[in-house]
Length: 450
Ligand SMILES: C[S@@+](CC[C@H](N)C(=O)[O-])C[C@H]1O[C@@H](n2cnc3c(N)ncnc32)[C@H](O)[C@@H]1O
Image 1 (cartoon, protein in one colour):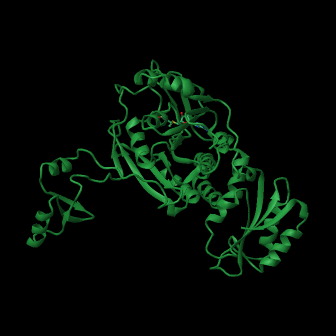
Image 2: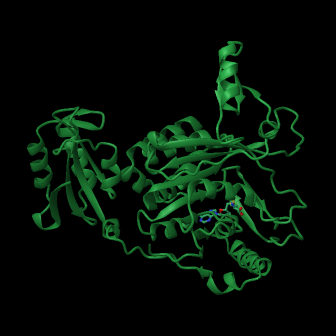
Image 3: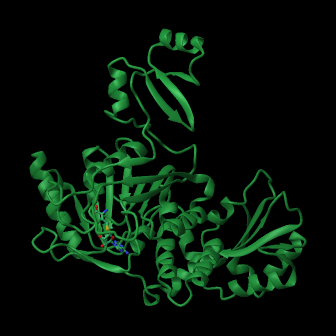
């Protein structure tokens, strides 16, 4: 890991994420702008006065290099973005927002450990688009949960139902390898009843059930034949936490409230951190705002890194962490938090690959005689979706970054061979020879079997 615990970066998170080594973060919680097409400002008189951030994404904000990286490294996302552009017509806010999110989420995926998870906080504005994007980046099979965070907030909604929930899309880097601590509901009416020794009727998956907390009694009830289903629950009154969470938003009187626009409650972050990390694990928040995640992680004895581009947020974070010091009666934060305005530099073994582009040929045992030929800077991410047990499954041709022929080679191959969408049909050795002959000297290319 090339970043120390308790570091706050005040910088665009894309540069910072690009500078973090691969496979070293246990948990990422990201609470980005939601694409609400407005600017958020802190209330006058609050400790966050002066803070504002824009939640509008326009074409001028989308960098050419992002679109290039997306096209080269993640063709599926390129296609998704094109589809979004078609749906939107003239306005392109959603396209621009998704391009901005895609390049950042690609980095988040890279830096997560195999046991790690990512929670993306969003709402109904973009959650369905973001789910598709995350499916492209993390793989559909690594989706863990859609958590609905419900709260009470009264607005003057006259034409629609009150919008009182946010969504957390949760993906694991590798499903079933991921860390997960099962959490339980506390003090539900059901739990209280059970504690007093009562049986409880519930309906689960449409089936009426009787929960019985005494083995002998459960047997009796089953034998009586009067119930659809009798379930004996051990562990006294524990009820596993469901995927909708009722946690109050910060009201104007809340002690922890700083007035930072969109500040999230500590209770929400504590729950996420407890479920998806253990002590000493590294937690990262790339849109940390007033550092709620960092404070929650510190309280739960996790390591943490926070990133926010806003200088005002940065100042507020310094103040918040200072207060935390006073409340906890230690000099802890003052001495140990690192405040950084420059992005880090990677020093892991794969850092070298960031300056390389590849032309790759991938084979798949199910499609004999067909090969996928393309360009990528992160060939591993492309291979992930095609790898199988076949020892001949993939070949990588590597060329240095400044070779001007990437696109041309790809187009040439796709034109020359029978093309079935992204897959071409032909003899592997012919394709390989064609690539090698395509004006690239042996000096700046390497052929390698992965
Ligand atoms: C929804 S707020 C996060 C609030 C935070 N969860 C909290 O509890 O305070 C989004 C934050 O993302 C930050 N932000 C927006 N674009 C960013 C970027 N490219 N890099 C880093 N931070 C960014 C904004 O300054 C804002 O503080």
